[in-house]
View (cartoon, helix red, strand yellow):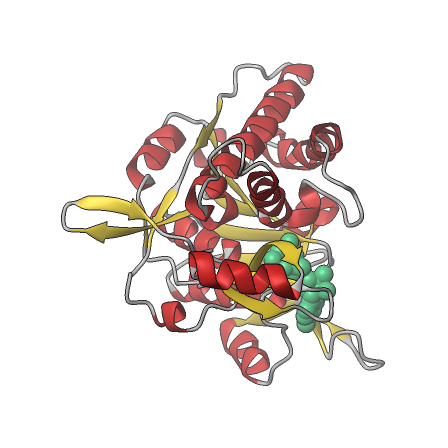
Length: 318
Ligand code: ADP
Ligand code: MG
């Protein structure tokens, strides 16, 4: 492929690209993980075949920021969830862009520009999700503390799988990316862009103003919106499993290779994909291909090039 015809590809990084299960989340751990992650991303760029936009999750990071706010609230005013989301995009974007710069430099390609765009995502203030807050965020609380927060701050608290009480917030659909134009301009200038971290900060339009909302947009659905907005050919969702499976974790589980949108939609309806984890990834893949994208690939981080060549992973096409 000629170098001026690079395939524009949007890549979503899963939680384990930044923090591994069981790690406490020191800055050092996260930078080390990010350094492994960017080696894989750099392979795509250095192959000369792909132009990339990278998005990422922020669940554990925003949870830790919320806990810091909670513990220090007598000393320093605590920040609401939208501000914590912006903070997490900032520090994760810092780590990813510095680390990518470093790999490019090590490969004699210090000329490739990298930039993080702090992203706001427009949502509908009347999204039905606001009537049914379901996404757990932040630290676990005792029953008494949960009741206090419910009364004082109006938080919605639920019991989470016997592990304690947690705040739940709405998870509305992304409608548009506020920074779409600057992202497109950076891409036109051959920049590797990091954007839409943690699903973007949810904002609503009130008259002629944008206002932040305490909600969480699913990062896979948000990444799909981003892929549509920049006119990407390929959407890649990187997670901690190499394939999407039918009958996942059952004796008859079956890895999916190349499937059509129709097959993917049938499997989705049959309930093969768990809510909040694999379901939004498959849904994102379906929406992307239906909106004109060439293919959506779901695989693990270290298999990205093999999967793009069609040799592993799950690929959804028309
Ligand atoms: P990420 O941070 O990458 O978004 P998630 O935990 O949200 O990670 O989603 C990946 C997880 O989805 C896998 O670790 C797996 O346990 C789970 N999963 C649920 N259903 C399936 C399925 N049908 N096939 C593969 N993985 C599945
Ligand atoms: Mg997820």
